[in-house]
Length: 317
Image (tube, rainbow, N blue to C red):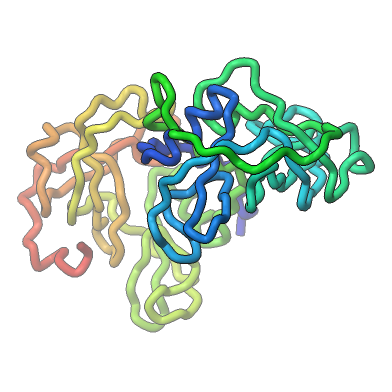
């Protein structure tokens, strides 16, 4: 058996969300160097503010301004900052209870080393030079010797040009190893073949193989070559252009489909090409199209065969 594959993998997407009145006021306030919290019916001040009381679930709308100074309640040293973290050099992650607040805010503390950080130390906000209405408008916290400030002051939450929505990039970097079964599957794809594995109990052929039957829970080892042609069992029309190099040349709208390859008992997904998007249909017979040097099918195109009968693939939808 060949060596099991391993490679770095990045999953990344932008998460876009609208803001309600509380979060809008909080983020707009940061842009204006103002930290807002929200008060509950029992007099607690929550920073960052939330729209509903975490204890009673009642709606919260009473905004207050708290001080940009506070006290570290707990901390952890970060000796090796990663891409996108607040500071490029080692720093401490801290929970800071700002003066006037009853809850703590998580952020970075710029300190020369772990010996300079302690629970109970006084800190203040270091504002970013350019602010846009995001938590990054607080560049970090920094040590600051001062007495605790007074009680929070009521605030109407009104600012010019309020922030009403944000785009939060989400990214996960990790090393992926597909294991024995999928390593064999990937290596076969490099030879323009598709292989699955058959369950010794129920005799179903799974593509891509998992190394075990999800129905019977027993290990699978018998490799079975399937396809190359298959049947579209169901599909969706994609109208939003993906933001990555692989899909840059693909114009929307296009179709992504579940395809049951001949001989397989599990449908895999792939892009449908060579046909107008509005002519793709359930039962369409398709075959893979490979780019020169490609390690997987670029897309699937119609074979020209008659459509498959619904009864032939209804269990694979």
